[in-house]
Image (cartoon, rainbow, N blue to C red; front, side, top):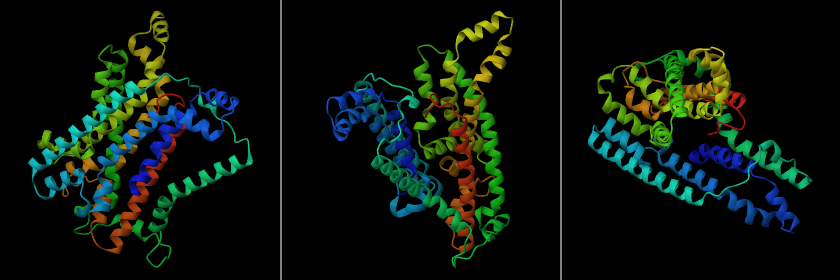
Length: 405
């Protein structure tokens, strides 16, 4: 249920965006020839949606295959997966050899899966006639369509919001059902054995600090990488694929790799920042690159002919056009850093003093006691609200037709 809840938005995002841009004239032609709506969907719309449906299915499979936090917290040792076993073999049993073998197995399987899918997609893709969403969207023209649309929206809203609303409600009530702010007030305290001697409020401040630094470092690297990609020639595809590797590899595998590669930084918060930066940087590249590729070279040439040096051309031509994409990428980096758990669980030692909010939540849930459980609920609510504000900002500032994920 948890994996289904997390991945509903992937189907809505991918399939909904693709479907909204299909040319409605294809269906209109079938309707004129006498095809009923169900046959029109089955013989025209569904075959056109097949590539994006398979894309969504493979992406969901990949996310579930590399899922870590959900399985670790909800599954426990009885439902161990490759992800959780890598973590337990290295952290609990001190067996880096087995953890490395499992990581290699996962990387090979993921690579084979993505390579097979890429070849299939290249063969199956056909040229389609797309139109802007505004030209394709239509209001329901009959009463039963209006009722059906309302029922779908209400049911989806209930399914998607009920766990989140329950989390907020449970963080504000006791087991007896009385209203209380005690769980939030307890975030200022820390006892021996709780989240490795770190106050929950300190974990919140750590997450905010790492997130802000991640925005800065990932922003600089992401914009620089996007600029290089926009100027690259034949090697752009391979360079782009290399920059997207952190998205294809699992967070646990990345965290294990960070620990092995940067073993001398195990006691430094710099290792957490490196992990968050490499995980967040691809999101900034994906947000900025489409806009950067869309800037007309004639604008830069006109500014250069007027005597503007390259730095001023970037500042007065590129930067204003990229501003919204940069803001979207920065919000993505901030929210990704706030919620990063898999890699951080490797690189942030229990007694390090720089544990993050997701790590603190996992530690609270792993210890008995009503107060600890209530504090975990309060921390989860804070994390949820911060990420919700971030994604609302993304929807507010992103370009509607470019830079989609």
